[in-house]
Image (tube, rainbow, N blue to C red; front, side, top):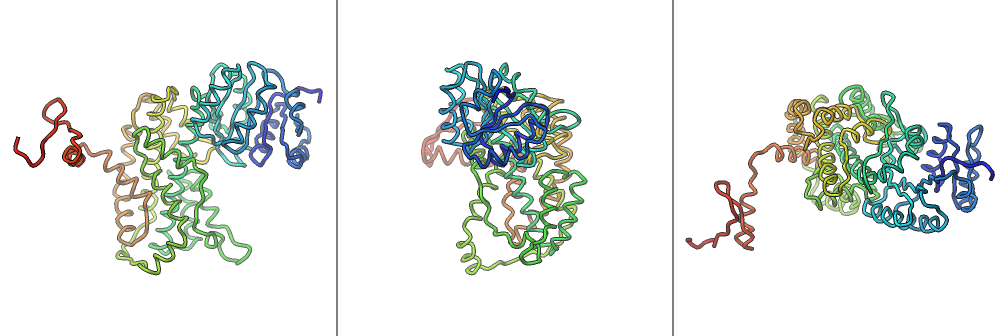
Length: 468
């Protein structure tokens, strides 16, 4: 293997193969590696006129890369990443770059970053969103690591990334594990949006008695308006997909047990560690866990039945506005979490940049992200998205619809944990006074945990039930 290649990639599964083909399509010489010789052969079948090669020989792979070597890993998160790094490290030179393109937990990325830095090797945690199609045609890429080293991979990433108005959906996001952290929260928001869509689908099906065909038309129409987004677009496609086995609609034959790979749970857990509320994301994780209890749910249905106390009419406009309201709330929760994480973990995240690179390629891309980008452009230090006046006008407009939708759903016995979490989060957030004074009194009563007063400074404790 005489020719030297610009970019190397380890892991030629669907994502890895597609991303490497994407890089080669941009005119870069791309070299793949996989121990599975069949995957190597599959990639080489698509070589055509591209500057593309693949091998199962690690020595040939490493010797075939230009210095500094730029090596992306697209392998399963966890121990596999550490194993691949351990196999590479003795053969790497100072200044070489390893890029983890998987969904690694951000603390693992911090550990790898520090370990490799001690050997003079640069490490990037770089989230990639867009699925297999995005990897092939242009994903959103979220790299974090040493900014000077990023200049070596920047031209490749900018060429391979999705473009919006000519701007690549990639940028250096910050120090250490910033990229993996942003991708984690991206996935948490994704969990929330998917749950919200499933709930309005359920309302349209059960409360409004709409056919799949009618729902398909509604989602197609919504995708032309404020709700324009990748997830709304594919929901319309799903609702229109016929089942080759039954001649019915495929969606009706899919088991209602949603799987998960952990990134939504990580987002929820870390938000609790930071003290940041993300109840819509929490609800989405909980609903996937409830869905797994299929046998119990069937037993409970036979025991309790389904009792509807409400046949009140809901309009498609009200459903649309409730969904848009809840999308905004979900984005706001995720952005608030990243704002806090940026300070706590010294990422120096730029919130406008995040909104900008999410506008194309990624799973949560939507028309609203341009509004979000403008909000952070106008006020870079905006502490919370819901405090932007322009966005506040939209939220206030949608508020009557979401309150009605949630009310109707609850009295109809239709579960809307995500919609109700979004509504109650907003109602709590916009309340200048909450009843948590009573909780502080309770804590002081049974545990002498003390409390603060509204009329004077200091920390107080009361001997409850005893006259002072």
